[in-house]
Image 1: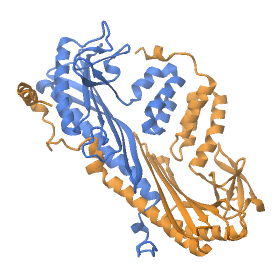
Image 2 (image 1 turned 45 degrees about the horizontal axis):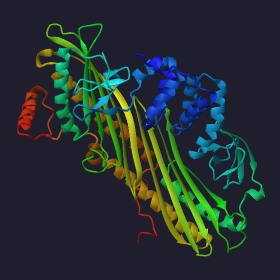
Image 3 (image 1 turned 90 degrees about the horizontal axis):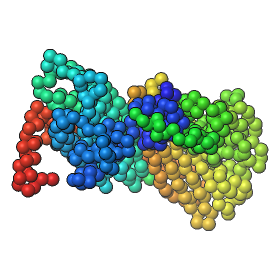
Image 4 (image 1 turned 90 degrees about the vertical axis):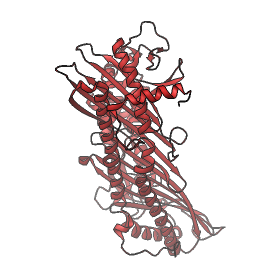
Length: 261
Length: 307
């Protein structure tokens, strides 16, 4: 397992799916470990009832079908598929509605889905907030800068049972992204990556679970975006400048260049 | 989870394992194939398949990344590339006219010998090659703190006098491996230079590829490439070398500038296409007051609008 995770740390993030399926076929005995530790790019299906797209993951899957958060129906149809309790479903509907607004405000497009389910071993529950955005100029890229651009956010949050008006929240967030620009003079420029972080908090349930979960997700998602931008992209840029420092650093005087009189 | 059952199909054949193993090795970021090989070996748990995969994938990887190896007596370095390949695991260093024998899997040069006359260009071609080598050496020394380069003749090397076509290739590489900082990167540019006698022109095709990998608690990779063309007049060896070096310098400097521009466009344009730093409202999301959204939604529904 350790070696498998080592490989995943080195393979190009844009090939995560291929790498994961290769590992699954080499290590069939570790498949559930691999699937729980390696996030895959999100897939989408269309809800036949209302023609709205929803996101697929392990948390809305039962056998080979996926439950839509919009109609609460499995696609393809599944008899006796798992459903959340009526109370939790109510919160799920609300969460999906509000998360749609959140997603629109931060992403200006994309698809989101929220799934809730009961925890077997305690009174708490688990929620999974998913966002998928294609930011390329052919899809939801408003400004048309990207030749290719994918962003997948997976937020899984465990909510412990309420005690004395408080609950324990444990959020694990993963971002996977890839962006490519393409120009005649600049060539192909691709950055791709994935990072995962955790955040825990004990919060008063006075404002409701949705408010607490939402704030945590907004904070961690913002942090991850910032880290990708500042730290991760920054480190690759630093590397480029180490390999070939910009000329102003090396050569204070102008060089004779026959092409630019 | 019942995934374990889903996937337990027929066991993989050796050939399938071999393909998977080669895929992992060939997708290793620059400077990381040895680490990938170590992990792969333990995941595979099959020494036969591992050795077959390594012996097939390493030579391809070494040549496509143009790795640089020290001669055994430390008298210099040899670049492993398709341009310098003479025969079975043998690579030419044109500057010293030495040939290194390479152990691809261990990534070392095990033996060296002087190049034979028939492996080297004619004196006429060598004048062009050598003049360009001198100019590129100045340029690489100025522009790359740890640059390595070579100039090869890849076609028409036996031409004795003017009146024939030939091709030189300039390879420039710079790599930095810093596993303790979870960071690796490489710059590789190759310049195909065709001297065309009839037209008295020199056609230049350049290919630059820059990769970087940062993997401390994550995995982020830069993969950038660019191709360009240019041309100049067929002149004397020294004059040709001078104008070719200027062409190469010009394009590489321009490319670096465009890479920097790509980075500076990230925060406000390109990265923003994926997710904004702040919502369109420019304030944090009002989780405390989400009732307003259901209300506006109901109203727009009633008005028959909505999006």
